Length: 308
Length: 323
Image (cartoon, rainbow over all chains, first blue to last red; front, side):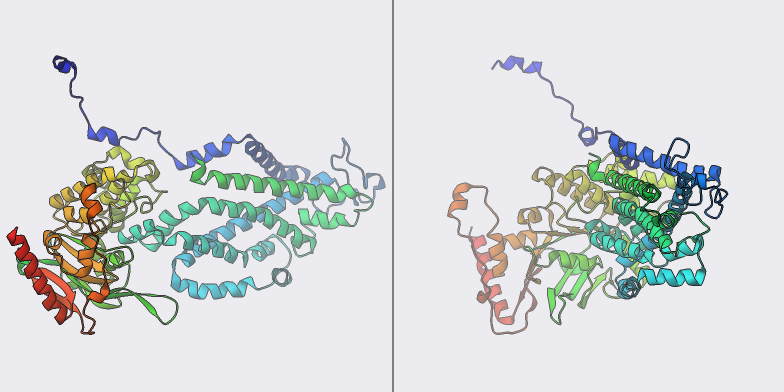
C-alpha cells in the first residue's frame, strides 16, 4: 500500500450525542389508536352503520312521537297486521301502529338505558376495583362483600326493586347498576393484581409515588384495552338485560317503548305475523353485534402492540 | 490499608434477618444475620450467586422488603420497621435505586419526561413548570441523552439508553445513597462499560455512595472499593476489593473467585476449579459472627475457624511477599 496516499484520508468528526438521536417519527398513543382503528375498512363500515343506527334511533322517535299507549288506529281494521310495504316499511301491528316507529322508539330507550348503566358501572367499578387490586387490606373484606353480592340472584333483585321502586327508567337504571358495578370492580381488581407488582411500579414506589397517582399513571393506561373490551361486552349485554327485564314485565313498564317491550308484545302474534316478532329481534341483534364489533376493534386498536 | 474507624458511616446494616412467608408456619429466611457498614463516598459491592439474597437485602434498604430482625440505619437514624411518614419521605429522597432490567423498570405508557420527573412531582422539588423541565433536561444531559427525548416513550429506546433514563430518574432526586441492583447485567456487553463509567462519573460529581449488587466479579473488581460476599443469605466475607482478590479467606470466596474465567485458553484448560464444600467449615456448632482477621477484612466464622483464617492469611501474605 502506498503510504503517501494516507493524506487522502482524514479523521471523521464523531459526535457521540448524534448517535443518541432517535430518527423514528414521534409516537403519539391516541393518534396511533385512531390510525389503527381506521385502517380496517370493515371496522369503519360497521362503525358508520352503528353511528347511523344510533343517530336514527335518537331522532326518528322525536318525529314520529310514538308511544305504546297512543293507539289512534285501533278501530281501523284495515290498518292492522299489514305486511311490510313501501308505505309501511316494517308493516303495522295489532293496534294499527307503525312497527317502524315502535322499533325505533324502543331502540332509543334501550340504547339510552344501556349506555347510562354502562357509564355508571364503569365510573363506580373502575376506581373501586383499582384500589381493591392495590390494597391487600381492602381485598380481605372486599372479597367477602363480592361473595355476598355476586350470589344474590339477579332476577330476584330485579323483581323486588321493580315492586319497591315501580316501573320506569330510573328504577331500571338502579336495578342494572346496584350490583353490576361489583363485577366490573372484580374484573379490574384481577387486572390490577396482574401488573401491580411489576418492576416499574416498584420503581415508582421508590420515588415516593402515592397509590392513587400510581393507579392513574401506571396502572389504568395499561388497562385501556381490556377496559374497552369489557365495555364492548357490557353495552350489548345490558341491552339484552333491558330487553329481558322488559319482556318479563320488570323493565320500563307498559307506558314506555323499548325493544323488550315490543318483542314481548309481538311474541303472541308469532304464528300468524312472524315479521312483528322478527323485526325488533333483528334490530336488537344488529345493534348488539355492531356495538360489540366496534368495541372489540377499538380495544384492539387501544393495545399498543398493534401499533407497530 | 485505610483506617475505616475514622470514616463516616452512611448506611449500617445490623444483624438483619429477612424472611418470607411461604404459606405455612415455616418461613423462608432469605437473609440471615447480615452485618455491615457502608462508608460515605465508597462503592460497596454485594456479590453472590443467584438466590443468595443480594437483591432482597438491597430492597430491604429501600424499605420494600421488611426486616424480620435487626435494624438498618441511614445517617444514624433507623429506617427499618415502622417509621414516621416524614422519615419515610426523607428516606425516599435520599436513597434511590437503579433497577436491574431496564425493559421492565420504566412505565411504558408514560413519556420520558414523566418517567424522569416522577420524583420531582411527588416531592414538588421545582419552582415552576419551566424549572421542572430544565431539571429534566439537565438530568437527561447528565446521562448523555438529549432534551428532545423528553416527549419519547420508553419503547423507542435501546437497552443502554433506557438504563440511563433509569439512572437519570434516580439522580434527579439528588440522593446521597444509591442501591444499584445489578444495573448492567441485563445490558449488552458493548454498553456495560459506558453505563459503569457513567455511574463512576456521577459518583464523583455528586458525591454519592453506591451499594452495587452484582454477580459478575470482574465488574465488581472494576467498580467497587469494598466487597461483601454473600452465600445462601449469609454474608461470609467483607474486605477491600483488592484484598479480597489477593487474600480470599473463606472457602466459598475462594471457590467463587476460581470461577472467574481467564482470557487465555491454555491456562483456562488446565485450571482446576475449586468446588465449595461446606463440610470444610467448623461443624462444632459454635455461633458464627463477623470477625476481623486482618485490618478491614472480616470473615463470618466460629472462633476455631477464625484461627484457621488467621493462619491462612499469614501464609498468603508470606507467599505474596516471597514473590
